[in-house]
Image (cartoon, rainbow over all chains, first blue to last red; front, side, top):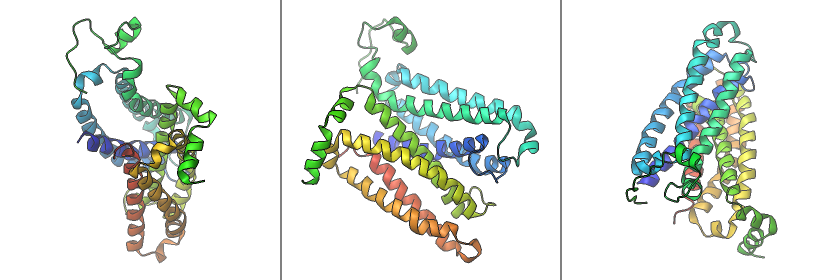
Length: 169
Length: 158
């Protein structure tokens, strides 16, 4: 069952991040130069949104499978922080340079602030994919149960001094 | 030399032994493999959705396909290069795993299909192409890629 949810999560990633990447590439001016930016966003973002819903649902289920392990996982925390930053980047973009999109809609290469938003977004997706992929490796490198650990790791991962509940894995 | 012997020869060659002795190199290469897959996904979806009548509906298919193909090729380059490295690292193990062969077979099929039939269908003048064929091509493409992805994800499981 876990495997099925994980498969859905990874496959939907190609839809979610795949369409987002195509949008970011258009913002950078390196693909589909003849298509107006507003059209790319209007026609592809609904698919990104649908993908996002599936990602959040499958992700929540994956988290629920072993909550404490995920919660104390450095890579999981990085992934969630990155997700928030992605959202902030998109929100800032929409409320600033996208406001006057009519001026640069047809440009093959959008203005610099739009390119920055697109490029930053791509970097954030790369970080997010890396963090997600590394989640299972926490147990080798940053496990709370294996003390002593550098205190910065303990702090970031939220390791507590109380007795750890028995985790089933 | 049989295929299995070839796998063994690759897997235990000095560069691959060095790759395996690092605790982080394999995961990093696997992550880059996944990033290539994402780019492939986006490039394939933009065109297949268009063929199905979704997404960038107002754009002519041929131009869209031409733009997307540029990034499909780049994503493929990254995924194939990292994929070969990943395979070489545990070649004899993959040799015995059924889903590895499922993935490789569907990958070969989808690559041949994409660069022959699908390419022809997307590049042809739209007014001459029946929508039924366009939708069929899109569905075949999506099904094959999904099989590649699922096969890849299930490689570790008997």
